[in-house]
Length: 273
Image (cartoon, rainbow, N blue to C red):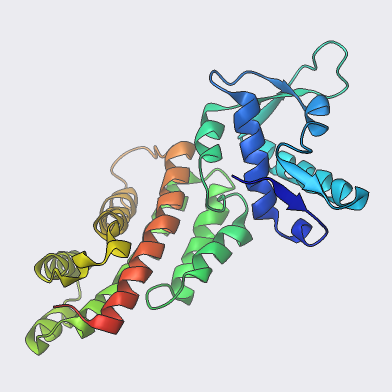
């Protein structure tokens, strides 16, 4: 990652600053998650991670850094500990959950509006207002510690994406009979199996290298619908979803729908053959 040249305009892009902060924390934290002092770390940013156009830019960066620090504490990514001897500020320890978050290059679920904006930005044929509404509810539950509810609602958002994708597939197949057979299926399980079969049957898309991860992304969306949404939605066991698992599903969703939208664009432009 290049050094960030920070000015007043950069202050508006919290995601860009967060990536720098995460990089700093990863470098300073290291294996075993040792502590690192906040006070002395602040002055070590300049030159290695970021440069400032003026003193005002430095102040803005530190304000943004403190915002990210607080949201990271609330999100359980880092926890404060007793200051070292001679230090005015506490150190920080990266949690096990935090290690996973720091590897994520997408928006993070506890920043709800930013996460939704990332998903909205790849919207084309499959993500719609219904998708975004359920995603918002899922994120709200995640940030309140309601992880089972978060995953169930995420499964509904995934079903919305899948249903719209199946319409694109139906219109893209060369056979009108196949199109009719798909669109008349009402039960989501039957429709999922038929779409899967069609994607496997028509393989011309596999020559496009930008679609290499589509298979995995479709399976991820199917899994969110079939297993997590359907199984958790019935009282078969005590709620069990961990924060780490819910986080992983949200991140997977953001990555998967981007691939699904890319595939949908390909089908709209080229059809399935």
